[in-house]
Amino acid sequence: NAGVTQTPKFQVLKTGQSMTLQCAQDMNHEYMSWYRQDPGMGLRLIHYSVGAGITDQGEVPNGYNVSRSTTEDFPLRLLSAAPSQTSVYFCASSYSKRTGNNEQFFGPGTRLTVL
Amino acid sequence: QQQVKQSPQSLIVQKGGIPIINCAYENTAFDYFPWYQQFPGKGPALLIAIRPDVSEKKEGRFTISFNKSAKQFSLHIMDSQPGDSATYFCAASMEWGAQKLVFGQGTRLTINP
Image (cartoon, rainbow over all chains, first blue to last red; front, side, top):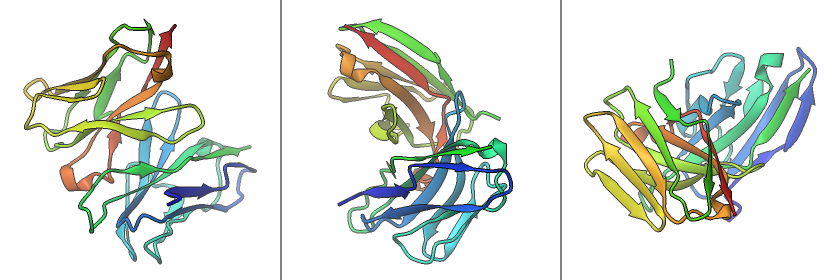
């Protein structure tokens, strides 16, 4: 299993540009989440999904959109990038119906810089 | 509003010492408390987790101590090694909301040889 994969690894955007961060998992997990990590602030939840077609907001959702059309994929869209969105973004997945395991697995991250 | 407060921000310990990282939470509805380890350039990885019906949990050299009345929990690393040098995060969530983790600020741990 590849686990949780994220692309790209690095991205530089100009203010106002839009882009999509990709996330995929191959563990048949029901739940997927997006976090951002900023120095001295830990990780903060942006959006999460408990299944295909179901998404909800986390702690810091403004400026981001998500959708979950399949169980495997959970892309994060930046609508109009701002310097405040410069961060490292982590996708995570958890909960296997087959095993009942609720451990959350994280991807390797995308480092985004907005100029 | 920081629902989970972690200290210290950084910690340096000699090899073989016992680093201790502390966390305090506010929301009494939390009942799942994991610790994550993160190496530079990598995503966090689950190290050990505890639920509030026990006061201590050990896995190898890692121990969580939990004090429900004080709303505090801590991570102890026994016989620390240079390979334990990493950033450690505590977190909390309601049990079946484990995908909605609230993280502490992180502790950068350095184990000197």
